[in-house]
Image (cartoon, rainbow, N blue to C red; front, side, top):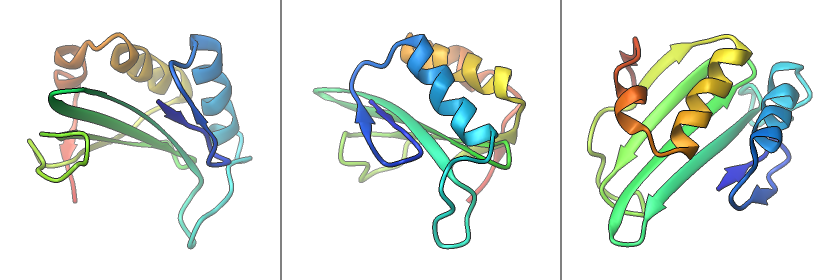
Length: 113
């Protein structure tokens, strides 16, 4: 599920839809919310548990979260963050869409709150 910068949700987004959402974020077209840079979020989860979420902000910050369930009640790890260029954010999102979580975890993340 992709939550676009305008808040609309897109189920099973295509690579083109992912790229378009990131273009809006990085071009500064994403609305600012409560003083924070605009962002878009990609998430996927399994019916029996595990939920992964990756938010990309207009300042280039990416935040990756892992949860034990679809309701995001129990975090499996501390949120991880890093600043990336638009093309790197697209690669991370493609890996998430392909459920390649091990590749995502192996990146140069920083723990963050």
